Image (cartoon, rainbow, N blue to C red; front, side, top):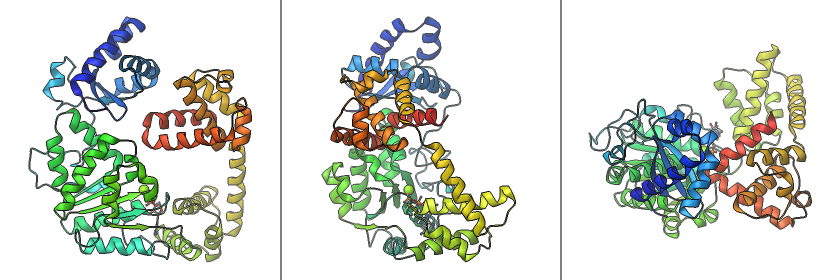
Length: 466
Ligand code: ADP
Ligand code: MG
């Protein structure tokens, strides 16, 4: 699928024609009339709305109806995304009769809100200070065996931007310090007066799509290519976005050829990024790839000590040891355990000591057990969210909607009800366990690239928690 603005507009007109027959007149006048078809790309169909309120209403109340209608018209699958049309919308779209926006929401631009557009002064810093988390600096980064390579590489890049390791790719499981290091690099480079662009891959994608939609790809190119440093967080989100990969590839090449530093993070190993275009993976491999491992006990304790000190607390080493020796999947959870303890002490006005650690641990375990969801609850949650009855979920029907709902059920049965694949298969009318595993994996992967699915799952989870 390609970006095709006029095509998108025509498609949307056809969709509106059909929707007009299906919804009440006031509903149509209020919510749908001012919308325009903006673009169709990467399996997404983007609809422009006059304001955030309309976008939200359509998203919440009419999503299914709209997506089904679009899919009928284009004869293929599409995720619908609603986007507020900006004040500076291209004339083209205004001519199409869409209302001008009031209070247009500023969508991401790597130049940052309030900074000039590309046709203004290009010498502005490419980044407002607020985009980097001031807590994520080299000073607050605790170095241990698990991350010393990444740390050293990050420092080398700061000292010699564009020269030594380009690109620098940092890879690890979630919560092990990639974003922290990336921001630390950014902070140092900004202090050196370099123009940097920091973006998550999702922001990069949105920015690129916006540029295409507005016919401003040249400005996009200029803006990015004017940066001295490009910091791109979570590149795994490029998986499945062919159109954006194209944009990324050209941006990357332009920067790389003029020796601008590029730093990228990923929470997948290079092998799992295989589905990215080959030309991209080979470019990434041309630089330095470093990974960050889970911290050993010594590093975990050092991190806890540093965090306690940052909070101005004098915590008994035994307490820190108790926290540090527990199984934590990552540093974010490790921090979380300390934060929880401190909050608990505050709330109950008790000192932070060994007794309290034991108490908090017991309470946490109890809460977790209470949170365990029953298999019936998951099935009911999925069934009522997708409006498909449980028998159908358990049955053989295989249209797209049912198949999706069934896979989401598999995934949530595993995640929320802690069931194994065989048990899930049995519950769902005798499906093979490999089918279940495939379903879970599909949902897991799709969540990374499909915002809609992520929202669906979030909402079902919320309904389970309530
Ligand atoms: P990732 O991007 O790999 O998912 P983050 O960079 O967001 O992980 O790190 C998760 C949390 O752990 C952050 O609050 C970060 O400050 C903290 N953290 C990670 N590594 C370290 C470290 N070596 N020293 C201190 N804090 C760390
Ligand atoms: Mg991160």
